[in-house]
Image 1: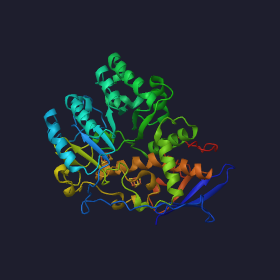
Image 2: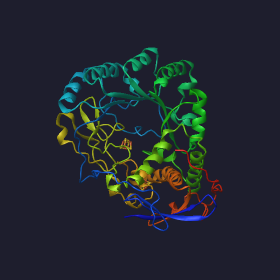
Image 3: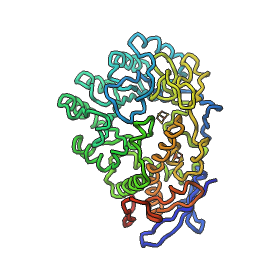
Length: 449
Ligand code: SF4
Ligand code: SF4
């Protein structure tokens, strides 16, 4: 049990306190009365994967195919930047791969994702591979994540015809961390806009943006993207990056003032609705509200990316099963274990030893944002884990505050409990933070959700 006393401000300016238990998802007023009447759902405990309790794979619902980690861009915070590349894929790999895959899968996957690097670097392999998988699994939804720089009329027509959903990676004004912006190149821009015009009316394309130290305002990203893609642009991803190397570390916040400033901005934008095109706001707030309504126990929480689950699998075209799509079979996790965790030819023998479930981390069980964060990247360790956890806290605590405001009409500003002292004063209003911009609790209006 981890109990928190959440100090909050009511619309009439009165201070109130709420009690929150992140393990049983109970939220009560000071007098013990529940904020909402919970109808407990039925939950299964998540597998607590760790080096001595390896993760397994079973009936696969989401299949992530890694074509290789080559990319034509060099984003300074990319999770794949320093991952050694395994042997790259080519069209001759397709038939042996398909044979292994169809032997291994008991049921057709519901969703197939195609990942690079930049997947269109592998166009010669990607095209016949996706067509073969489409033949085999006509009902599966197809998704591809691309930076858009290699699109052209032929590829766009193909993506449309093949029924792909597309995630177009673009950070808006923060794109300079990714290098040259394809939207600045007239030919590339025309190809991106052609694909957007084809898929947007069917809700099959989102622009996926990440936040980092030089791209810290969702409202700015939204305004920038709306100018290029229209008012109704759908913005996916939307969370703060996890740091995977020194480049990623440099893109995280370095001072308490940065953290406080970011939380205050994020919360303000949520309340004003200036970041409403980001689906993450609605998702996080409603997921938390649901956790309270269903009394979701923390024991049911897997990791945030879901790659610890038995029904999610990442594979390369040589049949190697990987920790996730961002690593290769030639790479080693910070805990010394190989990211190649088994082979399609023997799915029962897959053992994921690279990951650490949040319940085995020092701070997660006693963290007030656990139900929203679900642990940072499950294979990070050491200073990268520490920086990722700090970023994840500041990223998630505004969503916690917004969800509590949605449920109670009160704005949380301080969390008391047995967790890190430097995280309790959410917006730096109680103790203040040296050099932090002064934040003010904004007059209360219900958070749109
Ligand atoms: S913010 Fe850090 S301690 Fe809290 S749940 Fe996320 S990873 Fe764990
Ligand atoms: S383990 Fe999950 S969070 Fe970490 S890099 Fe892979 S997909 Fe991302």
